[in-house]
Length: 231
Image (tube, rainbow, N blue to C red; front, side):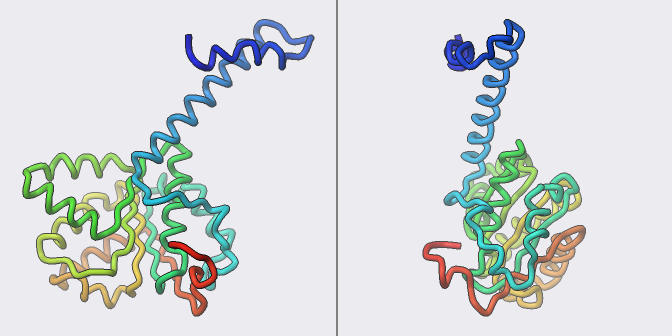
C-alpha cells in the first residue's frame, strides 16, 4: 500500500455527495501524481547541487538597471533550455547574478529538467582530480546528463593550461546541444586574464555567446548592499 493510498479516507471525506467511485479514483490518482511529481522535483534539486536555495519571488527585479521584469519572467519559462540557448551574466559583485542563476536552475528542476550547479573553481578542480584518477570520462558523462549546466563565479581566479582545456571541452561539447548559464564579474575583453591561451578564450566566448542571452548585470547600487547574505 502506497503512502498516498493511505489517504483514501481523507479523499472520501472531501467528496461531494454526488460524486461516486470514479471521482474517488481520479482524486486519489491526482494525489499520487502530485506526490510523485514533488518527490521528483526535490530529487532533481538535490542532484543539482545548489549551494543554497533561492527563488525568483525573493529577487527584487526592480533593482536591475539593464534587465526588465518581463524578460526575467521570459527566462523563468525555461524556453531557453528547450531552445538550447545559453545565458551569460556579466556584472560587478553583489548584483544578483548567483541568485538569478540558482532561481532559474530551481525553476528548471520544477519543470523536470536535469540541472547541475558548479562554481568555476569547483568545476575546474573536479575535472583535474577526475583526470588524475582516470575518472574524467565518467565525470564528463555525468555533466552531459544535465540539460542545464550553471557555472558561477567565472572570474575569481586564473586557470592553468590544463584547467582551461578541460573547462573549454565541457562547454564546447554542449554547444548547440545543451544550455549553459555562466556568471562573471569580467567583461569579455578581460577574460584573457583568466586563461593562458588567447585563442581558446576567443573560441570559448564564441561558443557561449552563439544563440545566447548576454545579460548586463552591472549596477551602481549593488543588490547585495541592501540585502544581507550572498547573491
